[in-house]
Amino acid sequence: MHLDVSLRKQQGTFQFTAEFSLSGQRIGLFGPSGSGKSTLMHLLAGLLKPDSGSIHLDETVLFDSARGINLPPEQRRIGVVFQHAHLFPHMSVRRNLLYGWRRTPEAERHVEPEAIIEVLHLAHLLDRGVNLLSGGERQRVALGRTILSCPRLILMDEPLTGLDEELKFQIMPYLNSVFSRFDIPLLFISHSLLEMRLMTEQVLVVEQGEVKRQMATEELAQSAWAASRQGYVNLLRLGRPQPQGDLWAYQWGDVRLVLTEQGENEENVFELDAREILLFKRHPEATSARNLLPCTVRKLFTVGNRVRVELQCGSQTMTVQIVPESMRELALETGKEVVAVIKASAFRKLL
Ligand SMILES: Nc1ncnc2c1ncn2[C@@H]1O[C@H](COP(=O)(O)OP(=O)(O)OP(=O)(O)O)[C@@H](O)[C@H]1O
Image (tube, rainbow, N blue to C red; front, side, top):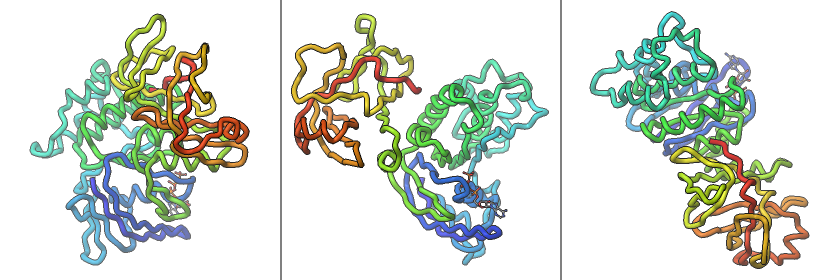
C-alpha cells in the first residue's frame, strides 16, 4: 500500500495536521490520548472531511480540496474495526459475515467466506445470534465481516483494548494469520507498545494534533526503552520446535535455542527480557542454563545506570541490559566477542 497524506482539520479548538508519505503493509498509529489518532482514521475513512489538503491511496484520489474531490466512505473501500464490535444485533453470525461480501462486486471479491471462517475459527458459531457471543468472538466476527467486504485497507482503532489480557493474546494470532494470509494493508491504533510490536512494522507517531515522525516499530521500542525505567523485551519469532528430552529445541536463524515451553503454531512469538540474559567473556565451563550463544557486540548505549548491549548472534540480533560496572569488567566494545547465557525458562510465550 502507498498512502500520501497532506491535510488540515480544525475540530473546535483542536487543530490536526498530517503531512506524510508511506509505503508498507502493517502500519501503526502511536501517540498519547487525545493526540489525534482516531481523527486521522476518521479522515482516511471519509467519516470526517478535511478542511483542506489531499489523501491518495495507491492510485486513487480519496480527497483533494483543490480539485473538489471527496469520495464518500462506501466508495473508498476502507474497512474499519473499532474497539467495540459494531455488529447487526438482529442477524446471525453468518449474515453479519456475509453482509459486506454480498454487496461487493464479484470482480472485487478476492477473499472467500470459507477461508475467513476457517482462519478465524467461526464455523461452530455461524448460526448463533451475535448477542450470544463472547467479547473475543464478537471481535473475530467484526474482523471477518470487514475483511469479507474486500477492502483495500483496514483501519483498526484499538480493537483489543476492551478485552482482558488473556483474550488479547488469544485473538492476536488470528489477526496475524488473517493479515499474513490475505495480505491486506493494515493501519492499527493502540496505546500498547507490545501490541504495536506484534502487529506492525512501521509506525506514525502522532503528538499534539500532528503526525510528527515515521519510523520502524522496533526503533520506537528502542527509544521507549531509553525514555522509561522498564526493561527492554526481545521478541523472538520461532517456528515449530523439536522435542529435546523434556525441553523443546527451536531454530532461530542459524542459532538453536532450547526452551521449556512448547509452541504449537507455525510461528510462535516469545518474549525474552533483556535483563535476564547474562554475558560471559568466554564459554563458561559448566552452567545450569541451556543456551550458550557466541555473539558479537554490535552497539552499546548507556542511559543512566543501565547499558543496552546490542548483540549479533549468527544472523539474528538480540538486546541485553547490564549495568555500567559489568560493561567495564567485561571490557565490552563494538566488535568484541562474548557468550550470551540464557535459561530455558527465561522465554515467555506470547502468541
Ligand atoms: N467533534 C469534536 N469537536 C471538538 N473536538 C474534538 C471533536 N472530536 C474530537 N475532538 C478532540 O480532538 C482531540 C483528538 O481526538 P482523537 O480522538 O483523535 O484522539 P486520540 O489520539 O485518538 O485519543 P485516544 O487515544 O484517547 O483515543 C481530542 O482533544 C478530542 O477531544
